[in-house]
Length: 317
Image (cartoon, rainbow, N blue to C red):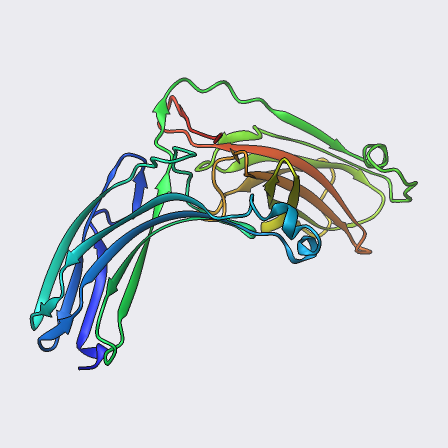
């Protein structure tokens, strides 16, 4: 009997598939069979894993030193038998399940779901339908998201961060003597420590410039660090870039800064003994002759809830 006669999917009771630590994952595996189908057992596995890797440029010569600290970190691991070997009846049949979402081993906490370049934190269910060697075994997966559960507490007032970008400020941070057009760009961010569900907001003003401006952009970066006491591999990669000015802007005109953070490619700032996930923004000014300058601002992401806000487990072990 071909595998096409068995269709199945993993259904979660919670439609948005977002869960918190200590929740119970409730759902069912639903089968639809055109005719009666034999199987050698149906198994459902729960997996929560942090996968770490080195960038290609840093792999050579470092792999041995990092081998222990780059092993996958298991946050959740559990398996149940939904059915002993037998038959699936023709039509629709369901097998219900419940899994407690609790990390019992180190680090004894569930990190938020995160999809990065060198660090990935994934949670999923996997259903295996075992069949005889004449019929191919079947497998389906269903991913779900873990978020930190907010705890109500007063949020400290936002701290405005003012900035001023000029040839002098850039020269101050450079070891080399740089020739560039005269300009002055000032502005502020409302705060650089904020809730991940809120936008990054602020404004900027081109006070004056000798050279015409082609574009001003805001770039969100992930800074992923993998490693341990033997050494660390740190990589900054782009998540997204938005343009906030197109063409030469009038002097003294206030430009708003507004960036929404993507859900799966960002998470609350996370620092553990094996890895770190941090974030930065670059303010990039491109002049008409394609001369580019950039100013970097580290940001701290948290998860708040409600008008009072909340703290989240932003630090691991």
